[in-house]
Each structure stands twice: as C-alpha cells, then as structure tokens.
Length: 221
Image (tube, one colour):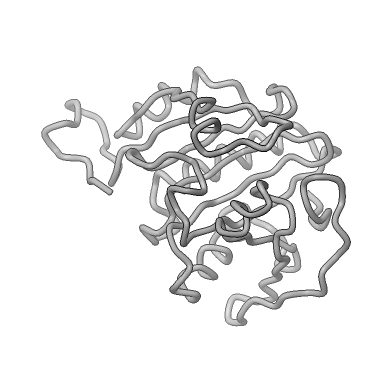
C-alpha cells in the first residue's frame, strides 16, 4: 500500500492517504477461474485526491441505474478486487432490499465509498468496497486484508453499521475469501452477525436457510 506523495498532488487539491481505483465487472453464470475473472475486470479510473474522486464519480452510473449482475468496486490502488489477492481476508456484507428506495441504495454506496477513501474505518486493513446489483437484493460489501486480528475485523463491522446509520439490531454478514474460493461465491453461505451494542461483541444468530444463489435473506433496508 503506497501513500500519496505530496509532489504528486495538483495545487489546491486535497490528497487522500492512498490512491484508489474504480473497477467494473459483470457477474458470470458460469464458474470462472481466477484468470478468466481477471480478464473480465475493467479499470474505470484511478484517483488520489478528494477532487479527483468526484471527477470520476460524476461519470459513473449510480447503482440503481445499473443492470442486474453488475459489480462496481472501489479498491486501493495496487489491489485487484479478487479473492486470490486476499486469501487470508474476507468481506462484511449488507443486503439492501429491492423494495427500498433506489435513491437509498445510491446514497448508501456513495457513503460507503467516501468512508473508505476518507479512512473513516481507521484501519488500513480495509482494502476496498463493492456494490453488487442482484435480482432479489442489492449488496454492499467491505473487504479486509486479513482475518488474524479478530478484534480489528469486528471493528470494521461495527464501523460499517455506524457509517451507514443502521439500526443496532440489523444483521450483517461476513465471509472469508478462502470459503469464497471453494464455493465460487462472494456472498453465498456467509455467516450472520449482530452487533447489539457499541460495547458488546458480535453475536452470531442461528443460521437461516439459504435463498437462491446469493445466501441468506436476512437484512431489511
């Protein structure tokens, strides 16, 4: 992870701690090996200042206007949004009901992306965030680099709920990338967690039955 150098920042602009890249891909119905998936990833642009973020963001379609099956990623420069890049990591997952206002999804995605590039998680272990459009629920996720520090990992989950102003009883999910590489899905078979209070550790509620392809239908927007 390389920090933005002062000499690389245009005059009058506000530098980010690290540069970030927007990526795009369309979900395949077939299981893809890592090289096939990498071939389908498209870079949309890299930025290193607040102003440059908005220049790029202004040209992106909002999640509510995207077709089903699309993933838009915002990752630290130098990292690709692939499980194999972070074999010891994973991601926190929030499902957003289709019945929610489409502007709500747009607002949530913008808030999450801005929180990541603005280092609101206060943990360098956060490497990126994703919005995924799906048939039943749309999905927001935050990826972390490694899972060995459980306290840091759960702090990311707690912070996610604060950033998105979620009810304290809202369930969020977590899935490690090693599991994703085994079942070829980022979201299916994710574990459910509830952070009942700021001072309490996460509680894992009983597993709910899987829905369709994408995992448990557990969160209301």
